[in-house]
Image (cartoon, rainbow, N blue to C red):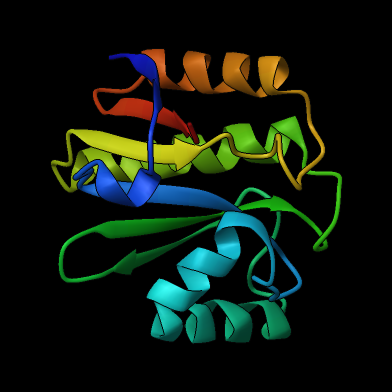
Length: 146
């Protein structure tokens, strides 16, 4: 379908699904991950337990169904500091888009995943996201803060 870039607040755009990059160590202490942890504490506990057991590896996703949104936790980096990897972003976002399509969700929003605390160049990440978005029936929306 498409890849779209917008400016705004990921949580205020009325998107049916949102995703964010996570590490595989069980920490959501900084960046937008801390906001996901605050908004969805039960999701965070499930994520943390998966990580402790070694069941959340690069490229994996954890899907959480909240009352008004589906949340995709994307395993994009091994530990809570750089680097995220383009391969892990590509694998996890494609898996999330496939899941969103199977649920009939029209759009999936993500922040500038991997380009903040993940340490990657946004131009490179945007290219990965654009390619994944073009191959999916779900619109992939990258959200930048104003």
